[in-house]
Image 1: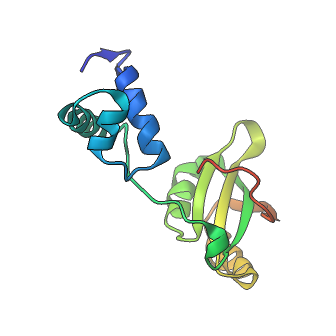
Image 2 (image 1 turned 180 degrees about the vertical axis):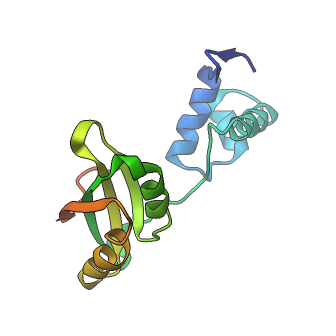
Image 3 (image 1 turned 90 degrees about the horizontal axis):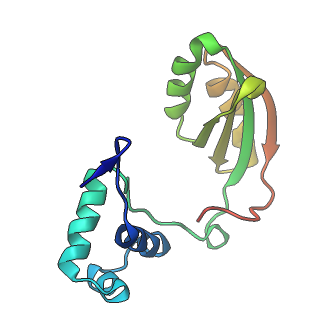
Length: 152
């Protein structure tokens, strides 16, 4: 595969395959092939290449949270000691309740999203896990009351 600026070249066929898989990762290669006018072998080969090149990192499911026991979701803004940022982010990655970690520009620090079984689990998470990481100062916590739009 041709590389441009050290990145793999993604053509229109690849983009069409990715669009279909983003909509439903269970779509069969046969169905994708029919939808884009290519052979099943072509689709299979291209998907395998996209996986090997780590363009497709994983196939996953998205749950309808309204039909599940809704976990408590919150965001936490952290002011990290920048001298310890690598250690801090590594320790945060290891905390199961944390679903997303964002490093923000300027003095904004780190922004994390957490999912917990209930409200009662938030204080122990902050006090016993997050605040115990050297160089971490918790600045703000906000509960997510409604997801208006998500990527999934």
